[in-house]
Amino acid sequence: MRAILAQVLAAALLAWSGACFAQDATLIEAAKKEGAVTWYTTLLAQQFAEPASVAFQRKYGFKPTVVSLPVDIALRISNEANGGQYFVDVFDGTNTVAALRRWDLTLKWQPEIARTFPRELADPEGYWTAVNLYPQTMGFNTDLVPKGTEPKSTQDLLDPRWRGRIAWSRNRTLSAGPGFVGAVLTSMGEQKGMEFLAALSKQNVVSIGSGARQVLDLVISGEHPIALQIFNYHAVISAAKGAPVAWGHVAPSTVSASSVSVAKRAPHPNAAKLLAEFLVSTEGQALFRDADYVPANPAVPPRDPRLRPGPGAFDAVFMQPEVMNEKMPEWARVFDALFK
Image 1 (cartoon, rainbow, N blue to C red):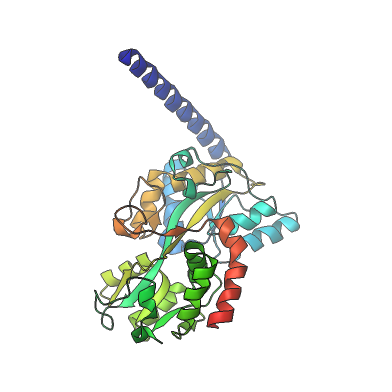
Image 2 (image 1 turned 60 degrees about the vertical axis):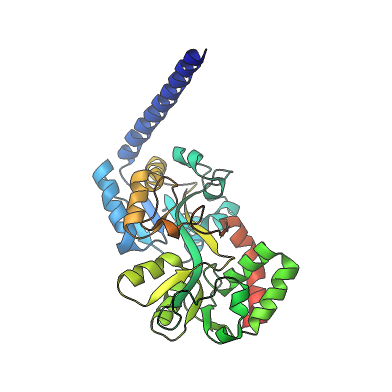
């Protein structure tokens, strides 16, 4: 009986893999006939998007057109659609998809491999799939805060010796003070979270009007000993170049994802799907790893496995695009009331 079951299972797996192969072959052929795809991206062009486009071209024979838009991708796509213009095929971003779903501008479709992803990394409703992770943690200057003496818990942040020595961005993003507010309220609950934030507000945290990378640069230069809500892999990249910086886990750490989606009215829908599949494939995810990003695909670890939250690394609150889009105004109001 076991032998028969094994044969049945093997046959089923063979049939499934054969169906997937046939589906991929059909998609590839259709995409090559379209011969073009336009990708609106928040990812750094020189660091990742352009090299990834070249790799895609080597594999499939045509190169994606990369439109680098660090912010407001949703607004750009919405404005184009309102004018009856549909240029974008594929887009990414941390919460771009949340707005575009509301405006019915996102195709309900996911790459086949998304079925193997953890639930938080692939939209259960089928509109987005994570391509890379943004873990937000603490960063500190190792000349000013020797390793082993840095805060290791939220209560440590309330130690009087850190008063006026902690900084963060005041942007309305997860990688900033409002994002830390959201992490505290999500993990601690409303009452305990507000009590902690009120206590933290007495620490005179320095709010800086620039992004998390720039805040970390100020820590490296010695202007501020500690920063909250920085991207941990930025600290690793800088430390490898000799900078006096390290990152540490102070719960609640957060993690968001840049997710890829196909535009509902994509001019090149098959090429769009093929590019999305390439980005989440093990081949595409290796490009993320080699560009010092944190891959989302569980099968492809980052260069330093400790950078990705999970067993053996650190715990983090995962913030899905829809949650960030809905809750950020509330978190920003709390931030402004306590820390501005």
